[in-house]
Length: 119
Image (cartoon, rainbow, N blue to C red):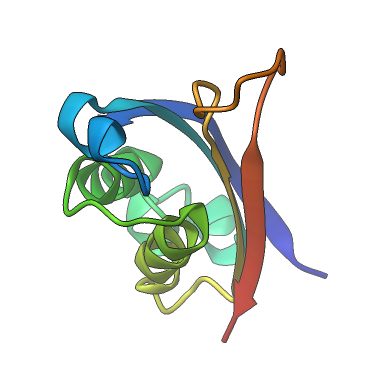
């Protein structure tokens, strides 16, 4: 059985999108990640070094979101999944990238892309 660490609602300003104004003006992106890993050693030792430090994870994800612009949410989600999987203890990651201010000329509450990647 796999344990999970969840980080939800990470909100960071980025300049992703296919339109010039998206790259120029930027917008907030909201990210949720779910990591699948075995936390038994961390639980047994009560030692942070035996699990994923979610503060450092959040900083790594934020750097990608605020970093080099991409056209597609799919590309951004993949880069975020790569950050999650950079820790060898993580067996799989589910990444959801929300773009609540997407340039859609209709009323909507959210647009999101979700991917799952595993080793």
